[in-house]
Each structure stands twice: as C-alpha cells, then as structure tokens.
Length: 301
View 1 (tube, rainbow, N blue to C red):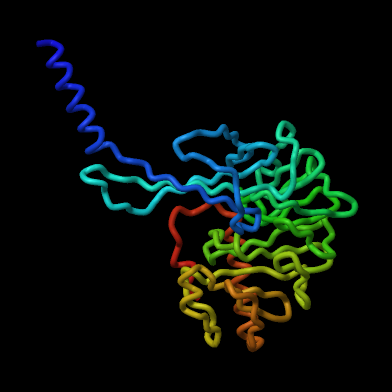
View 2: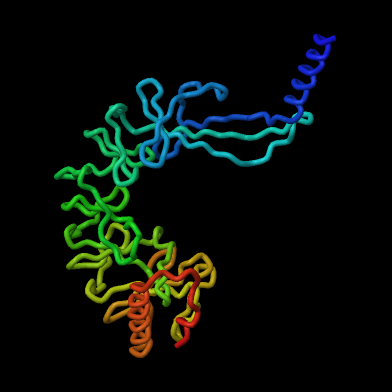
C-alpha cells in the first residue's frame, strides 16, 4: 500500500511540475563590440559557463576569447499546454582582441577595463590609443559643480577623456564638468546625455571645443519643471517633456540645448540679463541642502 501511495504521489508531483513550473526558453546572441552579429561557439542554454564581476558587469572566458555577458529577461510566450513559458536571452559581446583574463581589472567603477596592456570599454572595444599613453591607474572623475555627482568626464592628470575619446585641446589640470540645475538648485539627471565642460581657456560640448563661449561666465540653467523662461524664449514641447528645456548662457549670449544639439538664441539685452540672473539663482540654490520635491515658488519672477 505504501508503495502505491508513493507511486501516486510521485506521479502527481511530476504532473504538477509539467503543468505549473515555468519552462525556460533560452536564446543566445553572439555579437562583436559594435553589437554586430558574429558566429560564436555553440552554447547550450541548459548548460552553464562561469562568469565573474568586473566593476558592475559580468564577463566570461570561452576558449581564448573574453565576452561581456548580458542577461535579458522579458516578453511573453504562449503556454505549452498548461505549463507557462518564460523567455530568457543572453547577449555575449566579444572583446576586440585577446586579453590576459587573469590580469583583467575594472577602473573608474568598471567604466574601463585593462589587463595592463590594452584599455577597453565595458563592451570590449579597444579605446584610447593615445600618445603618451593614458595612465589608467591614475584615472579619476574630473571635478564638477553638482554635490555628490560623479562626472562623466575623467582624467589621468594629462588627458581629459569622455567615454573612449580624448577632449581635443583640453587642459586636464583645470578641466571640470558643468552641470545643469533647476531654478531651485536641483541637478538635472539628463545631463548624462548632454555633457559640457570647461577648462581655463575654453568651454567644451561633448568631446569638442564649443567655440565662442566664455569659460569664466558660461553655465546651464534648466526650465524643465518651471516651463517659464523669459518672454520670447520658446522651447520644443516634446524636448521639454523629455527633460531637455535648457538654456546655456554666458556674459555675451545664450543658446538653447536639447537632445539634438545646441542652437543659438536671438535674445534682447533685457532677456539675456534675465537668463543670467536665473543662472545665478540656480547656481546659488544648488549649494543648499538637496530638496525632496521641486520648489515651484522658485520659478516665479
């Protein structure tokens, strides 16, 4: 009787497994560092490969090649009978060239990788072949004007860089990032996609010199929440909704900034004066303790 009971129990457990335990449907995409498809080694999804964290990402070695491993979840698959199905996808990004796996380390919080000979970005693209060579061991974020915010630019003391590109003509010792602030002093997160910097000589947009701007008076003020720039200044509403209602201003002129680039603004002397005062207010407010909510009263003129 006991054997019959165990047999029935096992039968129902197996039945429950195939009816209710999700079936993982796995795929693997093999790409190069530019995310173009390549022919990778065969990988059985039900198998496993060892990974290790370098910085905040995972990497693996398969044969003599090193890959960044990206695991993607999501999507909906129709059930097979009563059994649910869960999609699971891996993207393996192959490094541009062989590296010494045992010496591979992350730098600047994992934004760069190096084995002591070659420098790569997180996707395994070999970068920054500079002369003299970038001293990655000394690489650190440049100073910025936002409290607690790490700059997107970095320097080793000789070079100032952004991503995998050097900042053309920059004076690294005096280089700093310029952040955009709301009128209440809140820092704007969309700055990660629109980088500005300055040194003792020039202003920079991305990795290139921003001609005509004065580094001593240049700054960025955001009207994302206020939506009330001075009369005559009009923003593209879609751009503002995406967090791009910015004005760049110095002692002589003003520009509109959005995700498409920087456009010169035709402003009167009075409008320029208001913009300059808004920049002063935003910069002064940024030095106060961070607010939990936007202070709309700061918007009113």
